[in-house]
Structure formats: C-alpha cells, structure tokens
Amino acid sequence: MYPPRLSATDLQVAFPLGLAESRTFRASVGNMLRGNPTKDQFKLGLYDVNFTLRTGDRLGIVGANGAGKSTLIQTLIGTYEPTKGRVIRIGRVAGLISAKTGMVVDDTGMSNIYRRGRQAGLSREAIEGYLPKILDFAALGDDIDRAVRTYSTGMSARLGFAIATCMSAQIYIMDEWIGAGDARFVDKAQQRIEAMFDEEHILVLATHVDALIKRWCNQVLVLHEGRQIALTDVATGLDIKNRILKDEAVNTVLASHNLPPIPDSDALNKTRIVKL
Ligand SMILES: Nc1ncnc2c1ncn2[C@@H]1O[C@H](COP(=O)(O)OP(=O)(O)OP(=O)(O)O)[C@@H](O)[C@H]1O
Image (tube, rainbow, N blue to C red; front, side, top):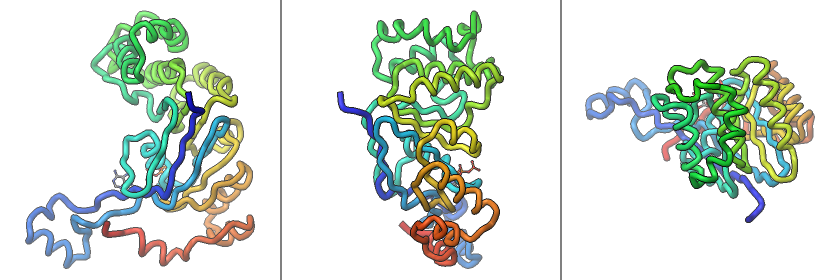
C-alpha cells in the first residue's frame, strides 16, 4: 500500500451568483441594469490554494469568518468539486465535519455504522471486527438501536467520531465540531486523535481555536478572503491570522515574516467576482 498523501494544486472553488429569477430574459436584463450578479457570474470562495501533505503532517487551517476554511475542508473531502485545479487523495479519508456527517438520521446508530463501513469499502466481517471498538467509544448503550434523529448533538458527535476514527483511515479532515460533546467526550476524542500522531496519518483541522492548533498541528495554512496567503509553521501562521483579525494590513504582516505580498486589496476585490 502507498503511504497516504493529500495535495491541492491551484485549487479554486467558485460559487454561482446567478439569481433564480434571472431565468427570464426580462429579469436578467433588470438584474444587469441594477448591477446584480447574472447567471454566469461566480464568487470565488477559494483560490490559489497549494500544498502537499504526507505522513506525519498535521495542517491547521486558520482565517477570519468567511476566509474559506469550510469551503476548503468540503473540497478536500470531496463534497465540493473544484472549479479549477485539483485535489489528490491517496489513502482512506475520514471526514469529520459535523456530528451527523454522512449519517442517515432516520436509521439507527447501528445501521449507520454498517452503512459507513460499506461506504469505506469494508466487508461485513471487517465491520464486525471494528464494532466493539466503535460501540465502546460511542458509549451509547441501548440507544445504538434508536434512530439517529433522536440523538442529542453530543450523542451524534460521539457516534460520528467513533465511526470515523475506529475504521482505520489514514487521512483525517476535521472542522471544529469536535467541541460538540461534553468535557469527558472532548477529552477522550483528543486523546484518540493524539494517539494517531505518528508517521502513518495525515490530519487537517480547520478551527478558530488557537489552543487546538498549537496542540495538534505542526504547520498552518492561513486563508484570507478565499486566498491562501501563507503556509508556514504554527507560531508564524497564528501570528499572521491574529494580526489580520486586529485589522493590521495583510502585506505589512506578511512582510514582517519575510513572506511574499498579495496583490493590493482593491485588485483582489475586483477579481473576486469572476466569469468562468
Ligand atoms: N454555497 C455557497 N454559495 C455561495 N457562497 C458561499 C457558499 N459557501 C460559502 N460561500 C462563501 O464563500 C466564502 C467562504 O466561506 P466559508 O464558509 O468557507 O468560510 P469560513 O472560513 O469557513 O467561515 P467561518 O469561520 O465563518 O465558518 C464566504 O464569503 C461565503 O459567503
């Protein structure tokens, strides 16, 4: 088996801005005259993203609200298709982006374990092999046979986390939903993730919590208005993010770390609405 790898090359994700009403010619003309977006206009949610992660790499993704963190996570997992560039995933990916990710909420917890196992390409026997570990971690008791829609957020988080981390993935891609459980679960989940900090796994974590980045990551990617502005060590990445949050000029902050500037923000804003 090849060692795991996760890479993004010239990644771009654009969201259509076209309004539903502009399906008629009259509405389209009206929108154009009012300066509203037309059907063929897109907003860049993410662009210029480039990195390669190998075993042992643990990447923290940081940035202000709307910087593009969730868009990048969803694209790495494969929920969003890039409009340009590409993502390469080598190895089994576990995406942990919300407590109920990938679950059919009308089915029981147990059915969901089997479904997720099948989706991961595992045989019934293999899933049964993982089952005791999953049930132990989820600690749902008899509730495992109830529909997931009846679970609290914390119960769903425990089950989702147990499924994702007990079925031996090599690449873990997470948002900060992990904080959804109670203190005991968060502690257990943190220990479980830390046990994977070895040469066989890749971790990607998007979060606003600096302490988690410091504890779990060994490199940081800073996003600003959808663009990757730095891929660097943890201390530098957090400093850049925090100074930008305090409204320091982006290029001043980058220059203070000897990093290349980004085009001036006027130019940046103009290029954010694009026609593909
Ligand atoms: N489905 C969508 N359609 C249109 N625009 C979107 C969509 N999803 C995200 N965006 C836009 O893309 C940009 C990046 O959003 P994203 O949710 O990735 O940011 P974020 O860094 O995760 O923010 P937060 O910290 O607030 O969760 C935002 O301007 C957002 O409005």
